[in-house]
Image (cartoon, rainbow, N blue to C red; front, side, top):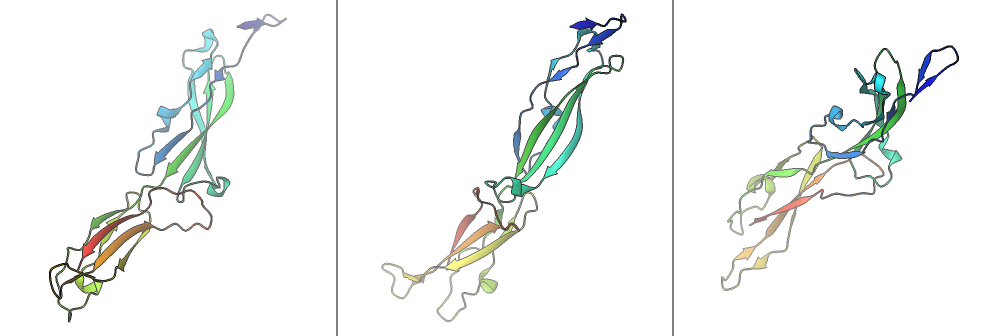
Amino acid sequence: ADISSEAGLVTRNPPVLGDATDYTFSCDQAINLDSLKPSAVYIDPACTVGAKVVMLKKTALDPSLFPNRVCGTSFMKVTWQLQDNAACGGLSNEVYQLITVEPSPPTFSSVPADAFITTQDTTDPEVLGIAEGSSPCNQEFNIVSSDGDPVAVEGECGKWVIERTWTIVPYFDEEVCTGTYADSSSQVQKI
């Protein structure tokens, strides 16, 4: 509503910007901040033409401020403000929004095929093949293998099977993060 002053000038109530919704994205998702901006709660009817919600700034936040975060997560604070038209010149309250970007787990791009060898042959992964992987967000990862004990094949004298388990695990250069996500996966190669 308009409030008249003693000098006959019109004083207008400032615009009001509504609360912003916080969002969480995967690191491989595109983020369009303009589509996430909060909505106006109030704009003086005489000041609506040309009014707009603007992003004042984006600030990266220190992940250590979030002790239960998922390892590899980044955080951004976005500051929004509603500006009514230039003739009115009103500015709203500032509204803050938290954008969380979580890592996506790496995946295998190839796993060595099962191998048939004799007792004189090596089981060295360099010879029988090494698993490879990729990360959707260029996150570092490690691939490790472990061999189970040889197990006799029932009904086939002298035939044994070793299961080599390949595991892909993301690597995070963080000392403290307590949250987890589905961060590793395994594939089995039979030898």
